[in-house]
Amino acid sequence: MDTPIILQAKNLTKIYGANTIFKDITLDVHQGETIVIIGPSGTGKSTLLRCMNLLTKVDSGQIFLEGKEITAPNMDEDEVRQQMGMVFQNFLLFNHLTALDNVTIGLTKVKKMSKSQAHEKAMEELNRVGLADRADHYPGQLSGGQQQRVAIARALAMDPKVMLFDEPTSALDPELIGEVLGVMSKLARDRMTMLVVTHEMGFAREVADQIVFMEKGSIVEQGSPDALFEHPEHARTREFLWKITELYGKKEKK
Image (cartoon, rainbow, N blue to C red; front, side):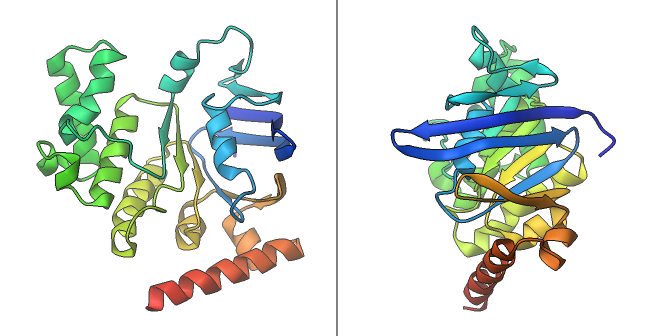
């Protein structure tokens, strides 16, 4: 892409005990780009995302945000995380707070906004994800898809430079997946910079600028959706795409 690199990983390695989760991962994310990471379970995709916003420390390698090394010693990790919104598999909402309060709490506690400013910003983001009319509802009164959209609104409210999505639809019933993917598709069209781990191949093919296929802790192949889906260079990529398309195709028919 012609846009500048906003998030960059250089030779990242993560080891837990005797297990190498991933090794020598190098990845550039350009401003306004959506990169979707796919691959079998247990290959380090989610750990890589957690390393990107410093929730998990890498054993070696460097991560840069807008050219500044965020893995450098004495880096303010909380300040870094404010610039990278993260949406997890589970929604991690406060059950005793309304949707509105779940979004405003970070604005008042972290960004030190006034209550009125935080309320205005939170309503703006809830409207962005189609939930302005559910602002006064508690998580227990919302569907899983609605809860995940509140979590997305909460992350967006901090005005992040990059959004990280770790399998955001994996905990949802099939009929609720579409509403979350719809919000993410709109963000991609609006050129929000996004790094997404997902098994939703239709979404990946439609929305991604680049798809990264990972296996056994390494990037096997990377390219445009057309390149990977139509003309994958590696036999392992072809095999994985065929299997996952077959699996999810059967699920959709049920």
